[in-house]
Image 1: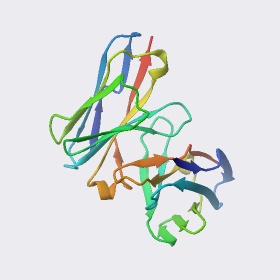
Image 2 (image 1 turned 60 degrees about the vertical axis):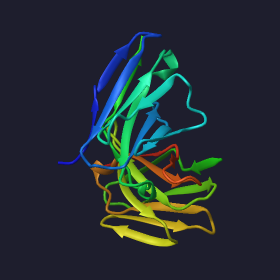
Image 3 (image 1 turned 120 degrees about the vertical axis):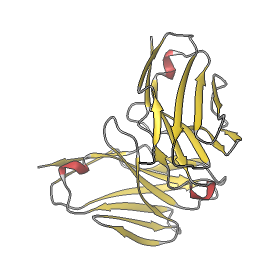
Image 4 (image 1 turned 135 degrees about the vertical axis):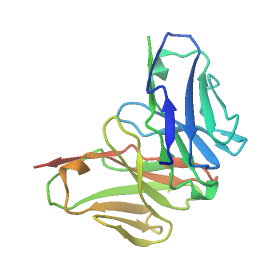
Length: 114
Length: 110
């Protein structure tokens, strides 16, 4: 089945220790998104890639970076995690930018910062 | 800016009908989507309205009124498995971005 896969599902890191979350997709979609979702809150868009074109949200902290080495993979790097970065991180895809209303989400990575 | 407002929670009994409203203020709005998210799960796409009117998909229907900046999700013949959070989401002025409301927690009682 075509899908969006996120690894790991649970990640524990120490305060200030860099961490990388990964996402892969077998849908061959052009657009990939990273969202941060805290408990009982809406998913908050961090950035998205349209093909290799990177689009950052204005309020995304510099602490968050992303890489998309090819169509299938996208990574979220948190350079110096703080306690406030503990959250669920969701990766999503859409076929095209014009189809962004229908996004396919991975199961998420729950990040704990100790 | 982007703002979507929806009630924080709704409760109903099995077999009932429930309506979850969403009002929005987004620049360059081009449509309203609805997503379902079970506890600990990923959001799942339910429906999309680009034009005014009602879209029906099985037990779920979604409505949009652009002139009122308002939409709703209607769930009929509620089942226990419908207990979840429901998010409305709107596209902003730049293609590729989707902004989510804070979500409505639906609890279905037997």
